[in-house]
Amino acid sequence: MRAYRYHRIDVFTDRPFGGNPLAVFPTAQRMQPEEMQALAREMNLSETVFVLPPTKPKAIARLRIFTIDRELPLAGHPVVGAAFALAQNGGIEVHEGRNEVLFELGAGVLPVEIDVKDGKVETVFMTQQPPKFGQAFADAHALAAALSLPVDAIDLDLLTARVVDTGIPWMLVPVRDARALASVRADFGRCADLANRVGTDLWHAFTLDSGDPDCAVRTRHVWWGKVTPGEDPVTGSAIGCIASYLVGEGVLLAAPEAVVQIEQGQEVGRPGKVTARIAASNGVVRRVQVGGRCVHVGNGEVWLPGS
Image (cartoon, rainbow, N blue to C red; front, side, top):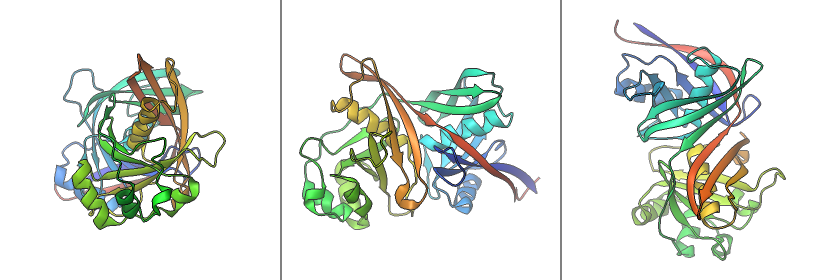
């Protein structure tokens, strides 16, 4: 049998059992992709990440990220959580202060900043790709039906619904207030129909009506296809898209950088906070970073056939 140790990390939180839970396999050499997929199903978390030797120059490690039914080229909390787990447990060497490393992902080689204070990892920030903005989607009736909301709960008066991609494409839907956000219930059939129209089955809703005075935005995972069940507690890739969107729409001024805190996870009992840093020049978003704190909540080991 082959033994593989894993870490359980809660990401985008400063306390156990908040934020987004993650399983990190720090030494996944000799593990086949089908075994990674099987283990991700077994972990039954929104994502599980497997750490491998890099194949690209200057990258410190290669990360493969799996939901329970698919591999993703990029996801926020697996990158942040994997960097935290490796740095905190000796998987990569870090020093006091800011450490800048490169991770290889399906979406490319991306920088990660690891801040260490008094010998402990304090925060981790990942850099996503500059955003690509899709066309505005103006059918409020279709959006309302897909989210099981009344039409007037979809807030298209000053904002737009559109796909934004900072490494993985998210359909972003503005809703009027926190009450509407809490009422969101994805109608899978209608979401699937709209996914064919907008080009992605990854959906997120958000509102500027945040319940936390430190946060400018409250967001919620809506849907990610008909196979993967459940609601993702705190979604780093989507929050990078939302922060980029807010700068692109002129809601946030990046001169030259906007720093915004975004909350997610209250509706599923795992509240978390993400800090987004968006740099822009001449009205164009040039850099997208998302990050925050993590908590190491445990370890485990699994056995796979073979020697």
